[in-house]
Length: 308
Ligand code: UDP
Ligand code: MG
Image (tube, rainbow, N blue to C red; front, side, top):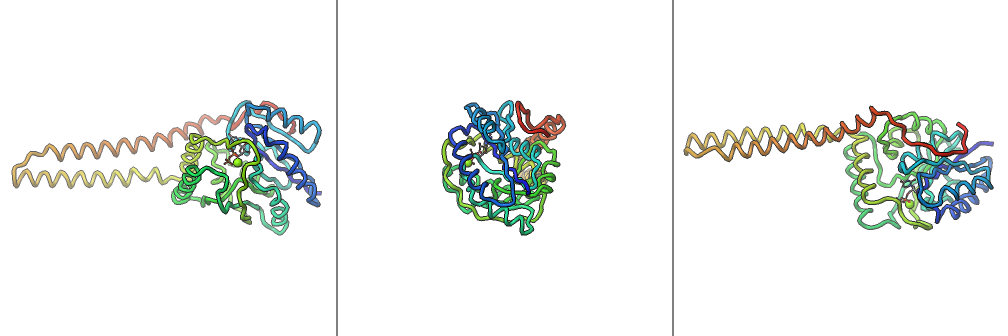
């Protein structure tokens, strides 16, 4: 009998957890040759998510859980689940049932057929607010262009992976974790499943505009060095135009005896702007180097029933 574990990041999901547990359990019970279990990661919820998970774990030994001491974010929740997992196959899915559990049997079949990863790819963005959805589409386009790995707009966290893939992901110790980039970076043979995003079964989205914005910046900087190259090109351009401006102004001075003040001012503005932009970008990277150097743990566990 092979084993499969499903990691479920949960942040204030008390409205939906029991529906999730029932629906996914009924799908999993029908899968032959695999014994399943859940790893619910309570990401510092302020509602009674933790109590519900604990109650489930008391009446069902298939329910394992990890409970954080505060909200560390979905990336940290997924990482803790992956590093505490031990099964042959490991899946990740959202607690809100937007990821259709009915896809799991097909995903497992794909892995039996020789794929290392079976992952869902979004075909639409149903059930998401308009502005957020169009902003995130733009973000993925920019991130994909700038970064060294392929970052697909539709790729979801909803996936099932072989143990070797999980081990590879856990072995990356970086702190600004952008899991979508990491999934793509580790490689492996992946089968993509078209997947229509369902409406949230209950509760509401946990991503505020602010969280999404930070996520976008992290995503771009974590997998790309091109922002670092920008000030070089901009600086080159601006300095060159500064020199040209100066020469024009000098010529005007020599030919028509016009004062040169404007040329100096333009040049100073340009150079000042370039320096500021460069400093800003270097600062962003420095902040990240600082975070890596501190080497803090990604999360703090308050309580768990998993023995590592
Ligand atoms: N989530 C989490 N920590 C957070 C935010 C979200 O563990 O800080 C979980 C949340 O409980 C859900 C999943 O991540 O299971 C996806 O979140 P949500 O459904 O709010 O995002 P959306 O589907 O709107 O993108
Ligand atoms: Mg959701």
